[in-house]
Length: 611
Image 1 (cartoon, one colour):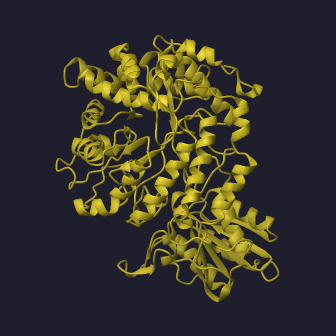
Image 2 (tube, helix red, strand yellow; image 1 turned 60 degrees about the vertical axis):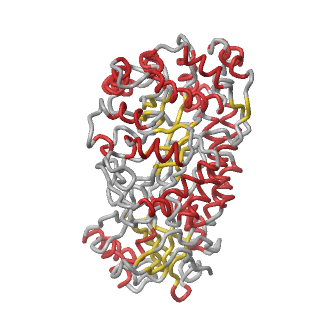
Image 3 (cartoon, one colour; image 1 turned 90 degrees about the vertical axis):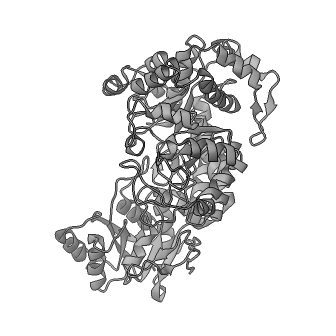
């Protein structure tokens, strides 16, 4: 494959693809039916089963795995990425990975240097497909990523980035959710990514949830269900597999499953009422894949195994009760939540026994791959059980067109990724999400005549992937473009006394202060910062750049805006609201409880002011 800097990529012809798949495409197309959700051909299972029958056991095991691999190129990564691959995977490149393990899927990460630029991503995708299809009985690879938007995005600018799910929940528009899926799906597909681990179907009923939060559409199960289904339909229209996560529902936990094994103590009746509706809606909408959660729900499985390893949950409830027969993919097997109870050699075997189809990103691919191989050879797993999951995976690959043409082109990237129309749509959607929580005395919109000089201070958390950042700089830049003279001063998430004093001194030269808050608590130094700024007598406008719950801890602020994330698109929309260029239209998709009485709502679901 040529380097992406050349500006063009060798796009293998359809004849090349057909030759590489050794006639599989032609055989599959014969007798195909139509998948009701997408209108795409659903190939005859008999043809797929024939394909499976020709696989070796090692090839079958490989099809069940989706793994990371380092590097911007499938064959010529940077030396540091070669070293990382050797250390973690025992191979040098993605091409060597495919030859050794015959994996069915690869997941892209920014930190693995897979997603530097759209042309490079397309070239990497083509290189992966070429390497896999060039092997004996080679199959196309299902390339995936986590492009939730908001705070979780692996592909950044110049691709179009949308607001967080909770912001979309604040907008409340199913047509906007569908447009998000359609546009995001089209851009991912243009770069060779055919499976997206989104949308989040968790209902965030716990304000203390450390891992979901603004990644959820909200706290109302029916509202979340409607938005999940709409986004799924959007992705389907672009022929990209969407993934509802994290089954059976990760919305009510105080623990992060990346670090430990959380428990959710909903009764079965509470689960049916709170957690199940979005997954039911996703299934009804034709969802292609569902991701498991590394959580324990004792009411659903008394063994207290994590859901990822629970046959009663994945087979009993998801497959048999909800009637889902699509692909089930685990959350990352490198997370501590799934590694707490069992070793890394047992987890993939138990997941398959529970009903999983795709094993995502094990910490050691070699350990996991060999564990599954040994379990089949030793009789713990049957080859027929593997065939069931491989059939689901191949059905999905066929439905997404990977057997017809797995390759992409630079021209397709240029026509699709980050176009002016897509960026404008993202801005319009985001403007409908910004939520005005407080506006005492009509402080907002700020007047350029009365408040020409602004100081922008506050938290500057690491910018979400692919956005400009830092938040104070983005806000100040946007406000300056809107006619103010805005100066940025980063004060961080835990400002010291000296930093607070510096901000107070800087406020003396400003006509108003805009402060970005990030997860403020009762004892937060950010609270002290805001209180000292209020004491200057200067008007203070606060922007909750992540959780909207911050407002409960800062009762003295005259104007409070919620943006739900600190991506550029959300911060620019918040700036337009502050400046009065657009009227705030968002309403809270979650309740904000009183800080002094958490049992009482300070602002209910649906709260949102207008000018």
